[in-house]
Every structure is written in structure tokens, then in C-alpha cells.
Length: 439
Image (tube, rainbow, N blue to C red):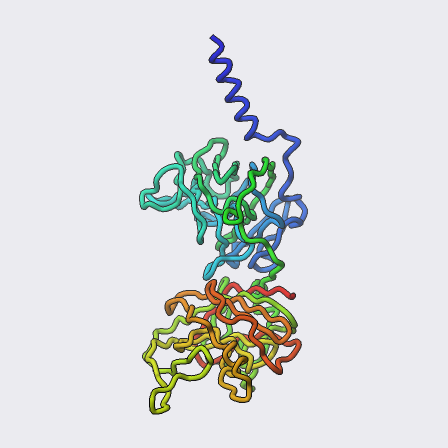
């Protein structure tokens, strides 16, 4: 006859474990400023504080994140859109930098959307994985996506306030909308990371953000987001602030939302000024930059390059050519040098080669081999690529799409400091997600 009492106590203990006491709540937003938050890739005035609210203009698309990671926790917040159809989100367990070719980080998104509903998405609390994260939705999605649609529609339309309660524990996420749990997922990876607020096109307000942390269960490195390393965005400021402004470049190097588009037609008087240079000089640094060549490709033939950096020749000593699809050319210029260029190209050798050093017969064989990519790691034409370029002293390493293609190559004669440049090559190229940290 004691079984009902025992069961009730068990339920009470379980609920108490997941519902933190009031004294464990900590504010995620102090109501006065953005202390505790870091700009990932938006303009300085995209997120501001007004009337104890975090106000997002929605422009450009991107995020701010918490200063530190969170693992197991309960989070509450209120949000409202100021325009019908507005879009935003709260990202859980996110990386500190954006994923390749997108203004958003890998993580689990809790949708903040107004007035858009269909068979495959809603405005009432969808939860889903994005950009390389994974999640098993609580209910199968109609299209098989890793997205949980809410069990009922409870969100209020713009400009009314909505309340979210997000419970995260051991890779399980649950969302309650205006007082009732409606969606969630399990087996989330990562299950520890940063919390982000999203800007995506229109004004959105957030207020009363608070969090109560729960005990850790020690996630593995594979279950943990990347650690922030102090990167700062180079495309976050409007009107290319942070880059040298040269007559003739306006209207050709153009920031559109989170991307930088170049039409290849700079009218600057001096050839060097057609490149886009940072206003600041850098010594030792690590640079992250996404790029793609969007033009329709044409067939062209280029030399095949050996691992030694030498052009391959046939039995008669003639260069061996290979026909490829060519969609353009550009590059990343290091410390103010047009010679120290990490190439963006369609050549058989692949992007990332430091061409002028490879072709310089006055340099040693070891130097020329080192600046030759170990493999061709380019994504298919039209898709986004990511360079990570690390410059220390006169040595450079280059990763392309997660593969180390240049390892500690020497660049004899390179300056100790100088600006970083994006190369003009009379051809269309697009950049995005440019971040730098000084070493």
C-alpha cells in the first residue's frame, strides 16, 4: 500500500534534480549592457541594450555568444519580434566561430520565428541541429530531418512576448513554450558549448535571460564545441571599416550582409591599390577566411606540378598540361607582400600554393617544395572553401577545408609586419567569415 507514496517521492526527486532552486539562477544578461557576451560576426550596433532588453536589428545576419561554454543547465528567456514574419534563434552548445560558408555556428538551434508555418517547419518552437551538429528529434520529422516540430502551437504573434524554458542535460534538450514542453531531442553532439543569440533580417527583442547550471557529466572532446581562441571578425564593421579605403575601389569591393563580394573591376589608379588591404598591420597571426569562385567555369589547361614544386615535363622536356574547369583566381596576401600570396585558383596543384615562391629558381629546393600543396583540397567549384593561415616569423602553414596542405614553409625575405590583403585578379570572387587573431 506504500507503492503510490514511493512512486510520488521518486517523481518529486527527479523533478527536483532537473528544476534548480531559485538561488542557483544566474542572469545571462544584466539589463544594462552586453557584459558577458562576445560579438561573433555582426556589426557593433547589431545587438544593443534598451529598456532592459537586448535589441537585435537583424542586420547583418550573424550572432553574439556567451563568453564561456555551458553544458547541463536550465535557461529561461523572453523574446518578441517587432515585425510579422521575423526570424531569429537561440543556439545551444555552439562553436565560437561560424561554420564554413554560413554566418552561423555549428550547434543546436531553438527557433525564434514569427508567423511562418508549414508541414516541415513552424513558428512555435522547432528544435534542430545545424551545420555539422547532430540530434535525434523526439518525434520523426516528415522529411527525415534532424528537426523536432512542436507537439502543439503555443507561440504568440508579433509583437507579443513569448517565454522559452530550455532544459539541457547529457545531450538531451527540451523546450517549453509559454509554460508547456512541446519539442526536444536527444543524443546531441556537441553537448557542451556556447549559447548564441541570432540576428537574421529583422528586429527582435530578448529579455529576462537567466540560467541555472546543473552538474557536469564530463563530455568527451568529440562532444564539446571548439574552444574560443580570441579571434576577432574583420567583416563585422559596416562600410569595410577596418580596411584601407582607396579611391576606385568603392562599388567593387562590396559587403552584402555577411559576405564580401568583389566584381574584379577595381578602378584604383595604382595596381597595388586594387587589392583590398587591412588598415592594420600584423606580425604573427592566424587568419580564418572563407572564399568561393562563383563564375561559370570555362575549360583551360595548366601545368601539372610535382611535389618538389617543379612543373612536370614529358620525355621531350615539354610541360605536361591538364585541362581543368577554371572559374577565376584570387589570393590572400601576407604582410603587405604581393609575392607572398596564398593562391586561390583552379590549377591542378590546387589552391593554397605560394606561387611566386614555388617558381623562384633562386630559392632552395626545400623552400620551393614546402610552398607546394601536399594535396589538392579544393571544394567543388561554386562551393565555399575555408583557409586557415598561420604566420609566425618567416614561416607559414595553411589548412584548406580541414587538411594541412602547407606545413611550416619558409618565406625568405618577407617583412616582419604588414597588412593582410585580398587579391585583385580581374575576376569575380566572394569572401566571408574572415577572422584574425594576433599571436
